[in-house]
Image 1 (cartoon, rainbow, N blue to C red):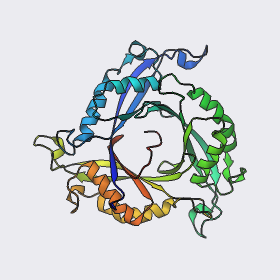
Image 2: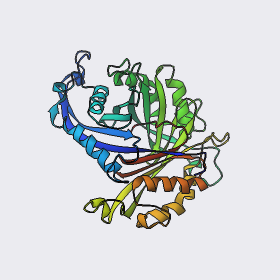
Image 3: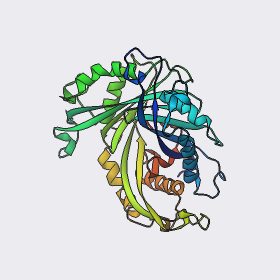
Image 4: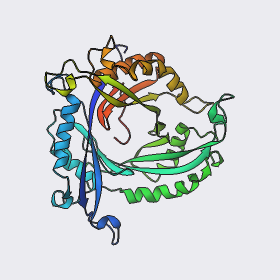
Length: 368
């Protein structure tokens, strides 16, 4: 890292609970007004001070244990007996109030894979809603022989992130309202060719995200970001000003935490199937319409990937230990030499449990 780019590490944890609920104050006949249930997922992000865990490298485990204990209070219960109006937003407030953390935290509650709510550090709620559409496209300006220059298709997904009007759990916008605003766009996108839509002659993920923003923002004043998944492993985010992309991959590696105390499982040689996500930000190329080619990201990162995948990571010479925060910071430092647009690395040991290392003043946009 250059001295002017100081990385910020945020620790992440995830826990689940099964529960039933009824949502009041809904129109008569609304399905969520009836007694029903979900497999909820709650996700937590917090910047932790040095020394919070018993040893350096124990932060993820301790944060997960705290979140799991909080979620257990709601597991296999009728949520209305704990939270009078148990919306996703109100559940996020309830859960965070029961955590003992040394710093402000961001907490999300996901009731299904398609919807949830995030509570930021200041108490503001952002609702998110995920939509799928099946579309064809081709990129007309790519170099001859590029695979995206031929007509092909994807099972795209779009996630809309909409801030509410206040910091409380009772919101002025809800998921039903977001659904109604999305519906006309879905009719245009689904089972069609994106290139045929006015303004989408060059439908890269980046340009599709801003195309959607332009049409949604007038109807959704609280729109915070539009995320487009081109595939399950890559996509783009637009927040009204800046385009960002990410490329996701998994790596299988052995690891050992030398600083863990005797008796800790983390001190023993073990392993993970890590999920690694690289985030990059850059002005769009005027001709190509993308920030960085996903294929170029993969190619540039491949030498670093080979040092990690199916390797004992803790034996890398310039790694102080095998903790996830240290590994993610090492990845960020190495990758920025080949990918100067890189501004964030997510590394998860297990689903939702790991770290985010960011460089510069960027928001952690998107479902957690």
